[in-house]
Image (cartoon, rainbow, N blue to C red; front, side, top):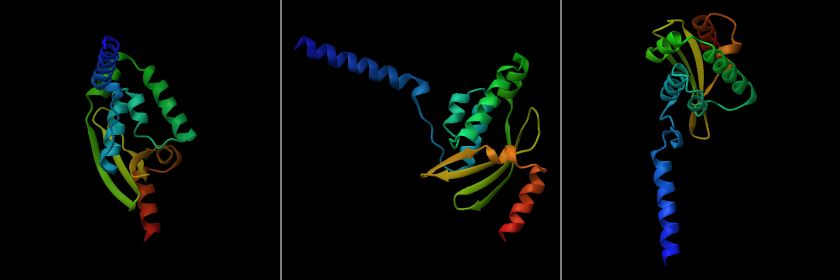
Length: 151
């Protein structure tokens, strides 16, 4: 009987430790804007493991996020602090279809407009970084061109 109590106590101890571990929590985004915001916030905070949970996983997106993480690690402490303290500014949210949304945003530290594509895959909204890095014109012009061709 004592052995059974020890096993149950050990299980409860491990279970409670896992519940209190913030890294064990897997956040899910409620919608497209929430996914973009969660991803941007995690990246600004330097929490790239968390950012990956909001990323559409493929080899190209992983390479882009790996590069962003390496660049973030090279920043001086004051710049990292500025990114962590920055707020997210959403400038435009445009649904392309029922499973794709384009979000134009900036952060209050740099105030450079960037564009993310958020896609719904298996009932989950995820960020597709390829759109950010592969379009070669101004984000607002690129979006306007795409929107016009969809009409």
